Image (cartoon, rainbow, N blue to C red):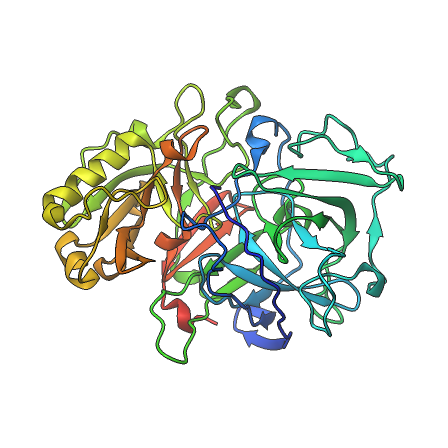
Length: 442
């Protein structure tokens, strides 16, 4: 849920579905997922999630989660963002979408300005799908005060419902609201879901919005759970690590440990709180064997709603409020201060960066642990404490959230979700974690 700089790249990917049998999962689908290297046109700042502005207006409760009819497994290859490839429409067209648990509306690309290449193409062609339909202006969602959208919906010149979705980095995606199916196989598909059909944006890929909002993919598809496994970034020549993305039951869930999601009543909807985020109760942070002196209150919403702790697949790095960030930096300086790159602030938010041997510096820092209730932990091993940000510079993968603009929050990004299963158990309102070798998890 942070600044995300869109890539101006067109991709093509081939869909090769494979049905696999699991002991407790009689039918699941496995699809290859594709990622791209970072764009040379992208900002040297952080490549992280879109921030939906709905926290200022979204007061609708998420839909109830009944039994999910879907069991769908997919892999993704790690880049700065997590990409899933979904078969959309009838017959299906493979669409690359950014997996984002920090935003609500899912949208696909319907750009006419991008020339359609021979299939498969990253741009969706509505004329080729028999299940595609548009929302007219008289649809209940097409009203100027609908809180799910950051700018009012409106009628366009064709009397169709026009939406605008604004993200905190200034990105604006807009087009028409439509209905379309996700087609997993010839016998399994979702009912028509409300999506954005973007005609104006700066990327040729879409967004798979997975937060708790009523219009997220998870809510509309009535998923009981979904999960993903982010592979590590170490890439051997000729090998790109591939993780997994599941809709429905995950055959690996037996070893997961769970923490409850924090819920907020209507009366608790404070102006700086995002009630649709996956908010958890973080307890503290350890570096090496040292428990940092950070009060638990730093990880909880204050009276304005700022300071909540969220799990976000769309944010690359982890961000902390100043009270927590300063304690982390203090300990890092104590351990490896002389090696800090002086006067260097990566992306305007992180000043814990180094030149030199990253492995050696990582050993000096040691493991980093995010502590939650019930003894559940996310352990970031010392080999993965530092991120390669280019130019021979490595940074601790944590930024100062106050520098992002807007309300400060604690956000656990996908950099610190490498090699663990993260499961969102929506029916039981909890999040599960399980250690894994994600490059072998498909």
